[in-house]
Length: 196
Ligand code: GLN
Image (tube, rainbow, N blue to C red; front, top):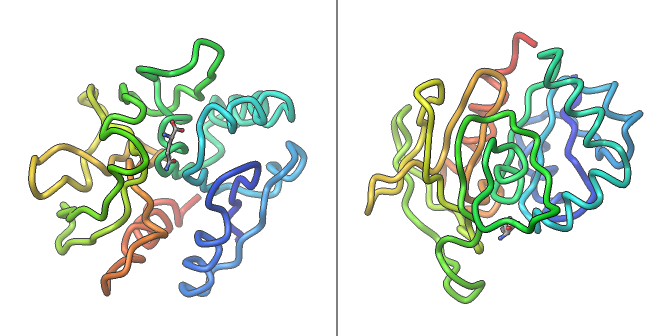
């Protein structure tokens, strides 16, 4: 079954390459009708305010809300994608929407400006580590007991990769990462959602 990649804005192509390297086909989603063909979706990093506008104007937002309510779709949100999945967005624009599918509060741009972006060491709860890019990344400031932590920053211990049922979110860009086990995060998403 193909994995959808929301392709309204942001880092779409590299997610496609990671999936290809795992021999998984993907389909770029640009309309609400296309959503009906997938049960797994990646929302890439980019700019959550821009994506929010495009989600609403294309009505993909409405269709996604329905699918989430029906529990018929698994979503992996990375960076801006995590912001769009979250219950609460701190330092967001007033008109910015979120899907409220992950019970966390995230603060946008919490590490500072674009120039403060860096690769950081993430310890995976499942073992091993990765060193992906954090680009004007959000921070998870509040996390409900319903949410599992899958990865933490080595330095501070703060959660950067989380999962709640069919929803998974990363504050970083797992597709922009150069150590050996980088595709581990995509593999986890595929593994957790295989039975869907
Ligand atoms: N700061 C961006 C936002 O608020 C997210 C950055 C990213 O996805 N790399 O949407």
